[in-house]
Amino acid sequence: MSEGGVSLDQNLSESLGSLLLCFGDIEIDAGWADRIPADNEEQRKNKIFLQMEESAKQKDLDERTKKAATGLYKPPTEEEEIALKAENATREEKIAEYKFKSKPKPPVKQWIRETSIHDLLISLDRMAEYDRMLSDLSKIPFDGWSNEDRVLKKLNRPYIKEFVELPEIQGDQNYSSDKDIQKIVEGINDCVTIPDPNESAKNAFAVTLFCMESMFDNRSKDFLKYAFDMFPDRDYLIVTQPHTIAETALLNKFSIVPKKSENTFSHVLYVLHRDQLYEQDMHVSRTTKADLDQIQSLIESSGASTQKTEDYMKQITNATTSFASPNLSFCARIENQVIATFMISKDVNLDYYISHFHIQD
Image (cartoon, rainbow, N blue to C red; front, side, top):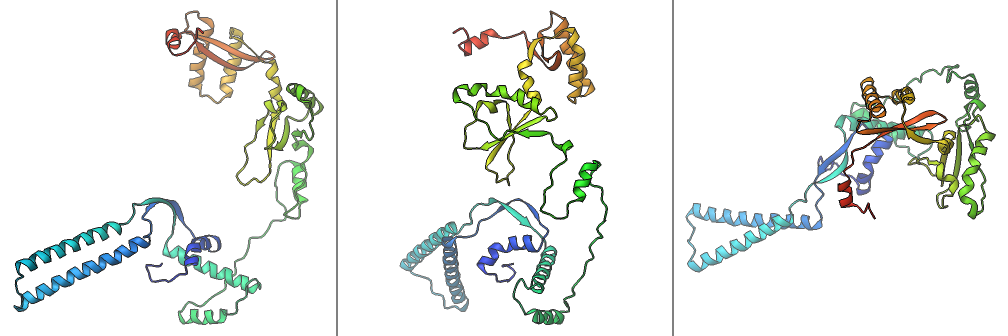
């Protein structure tokens, strides 16, 4: 806009993009691009000096050419020739110095928002419409709309206020297939109230107060089983505490829930599923033929393709039934239910590890 002759205030030019995005809802394409930084004060001065030196050089050349054309040119003496060469050399050095100092800086990566003239004009019309609306609502003091309307009429662009009909609001809408949730939603008549969920949707309980002598802190996890026993219909236990407080042994089995960027809550959220308590009942042993059916069901439930499932089962079966297999298969179980499986290799380059680690120490 500046290159097109539009004069903008410095403060306005810096915030114009944000104004167009906020109030004009302008359409943009955002992305990274190479941009040459603006000239600093030193670069601008050297560009002026460069222009002056080049103008003086061209002026001297034009005068000599004019004298030669009119026959008034007198060849310089040897001393004048030496002085002229020295003057030209000094001038060329200055020109080279000014060119170097006024040279643009290398391009840098900048996050830019590009738009078109068409979208810019539409955005300006939207901003004008928004200003008129605020004026009609007495939110901003301005009484010059009549003058603006007169100018627009002379430009054959009279202001026409358009009315856009809003879609009709349906009286009855189905928000959920759950009758209890549907009833709760239908009872909301404002945008502030947060209703309590129905009992069927509640699946967690919270620890609101916990005190433990420090010397017995490592036994605090023993409370977890009895806590879940008091709420047999809940699957999750939640705890919050300020991030400045050190974690106790109670939280060792909990998982930290990552915060959202816009979250201003000063506490850390911990969540524990009741199945995590089965950890103490888990044991690992060699895979047997009786475990193969459960292992296949476990692999299939993980979303593996049919081909991968067949390949995995072939390797596990071979490691379980053949002594010649280079692998050994193991299973993790809880109450005779296979929850995990893994294989380890028999072939270990022991000499390699001995040479790199203090294994025999």
